Length: 129
Image (tube, rainbow, N blue to C red; front, side, top):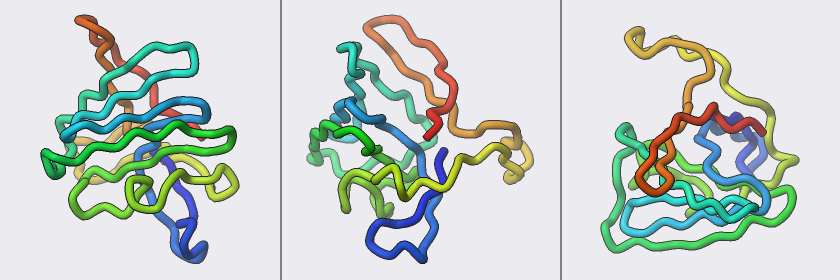
């Protein structure tokens, strides 16, 4: 989970999930998000917390050096990289290290993402800027 300045108005600060890193390709197909890493591994995000979007929405973005792809949990109402494009590295302020609310979900380094590669699923630590 990253904290950054909105590219369209740097006085506004957002907190979103960092989905894609420089050199990766982010693909969204009917609400399913996959990331193809720079070495060619395709990872499918398991996001049970995310509110899915329109089942007809598709997008493919390959990130250049210094670009990140960010998305919010409430996808139908989130202003994120799907709308305004990749996030420049210079806009990233930091990461979220502690979640306090709701209390049941409090903990360190929120936003750890589960990826599925083929039939195997693994937990990956949160992406850091």
